Image: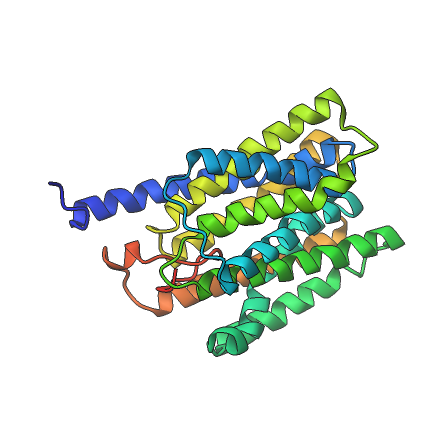
Length: 307
């Protein structure tokens, strides 16, 4: 029988996981475009998208184990906040604002990690928090309408929810992120049901929701849960930048929505700060061996033996 832990097999698993992670990030990046292209209530969009994604994951999944533990249920609730508020934010502000501000999630992990996981923030974390906060402040420097301000605030809360999701995933012992994601999608669909009545997305909107549920949410998360077990912190952090970079690009090319000047500067500060932090944290641990490459990481690409 082939030894899965031989160096050659580990290298192959690592390379394959990098490709899967890149494909997942690329698929996620179409979220803003698909959301803005459907003329329907944002909560209804969120529920329909998640309901379809839940079916995709349930069909593809094997040996699911729902423990109904506090971290699993808490993670599912945080997932609901992450995906639902992201959709609402996209309807109220630009796609660039929505994805850039959701990408602030590492600062919430650093701030809450001590109380929740007993993990103390390092000087790198505090520098990143300061830089990200400065970047976030620039989003309010543009000439904003009341709706735009509301969208930015909701996008920030979505980033907070995403950070909480990562913390709950890290809290689970010998668990799998897939059950949390499936449960989160089911909860999102159930909570959004009341918003689906009284209106319709139309035929074209229904097709776009099908694409969003299958190709932008379901399959990417399936690929993600496979790849995350064999990828390093550095790889995951660098690959993750594909989504916030490409998301506003697709919206710009297809719809013509331009990011506002100060928001664009703030978004670049956020992305660079988080990415540099990820690189510093990963490289600070020294040379990455083949054995290190199969250590699981959390949803933000940080190594975590608890997952």
